[in-house]
Length: 263
Image 1 (cartoon, rainbow, N blue to C red):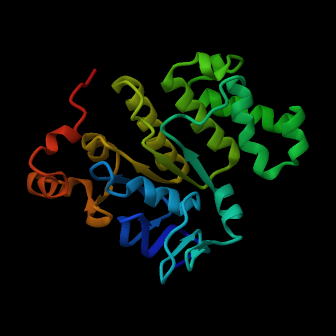
Image 2 (image 1 turned 90 degrees about the vertical axis):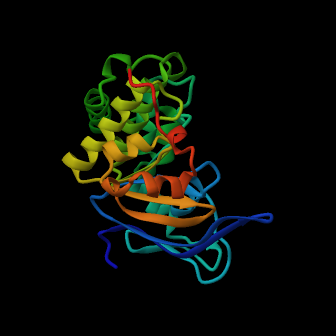
Image 3 (image 1 turned 180 degrees about the vertical axis):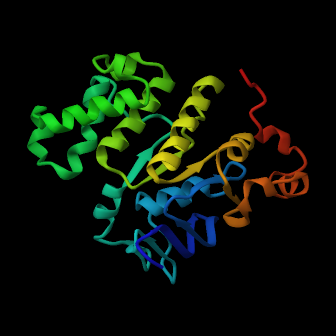
């Protein structure tokens, strides 16, 4: 394993009460890969993503998680290395995770907090260079015209692209996106997924994205990891998700996992 590995998960379990959200999961994501995590609701895909970032602690035992070569979880505990790891990971959430009362520009500037003194964020005193980078990031994702608007006045798609711009300003080396299109209409969802693909192809960023929409996983990601009841049941090319495989993952009504409305 080298630092070129975005995340390495080895024999990781996570228990909530009597339910095993993760059950001996092992998976490795290389730098430059764009990987979709799929599976039925409650399969463990979001728990896996949150465990990689240290937002969710794993069970004690032999499970180990490393991010860019640094151990972030071991023996059921989050290590001190997680802070440095998070600086390298741009997190994008289903509900955008923007501060609604702040402008879109100010939300993007928050991506610089990990490498600047906290007082700059408190008083909004940002370096000119970072301001320029923030506007460039907003322009790149197509929402620079809305920089001055409060985040809570924007559409879901605009907010989500703002979250991507924030990750760009952060200088993230990989993007972890947890159901980033679940709250969006199909047109906005495609724009967000296309933006993630561009970051992967043009910038070489590793992307790990959880998706309910199997057709989006097939269309946008070359590799798919499928979970079922906390276990990995498929890890391979998206082209390998044939009818039999999908029935095995979702059951006979697997068509429900497709986003049928294609605007």
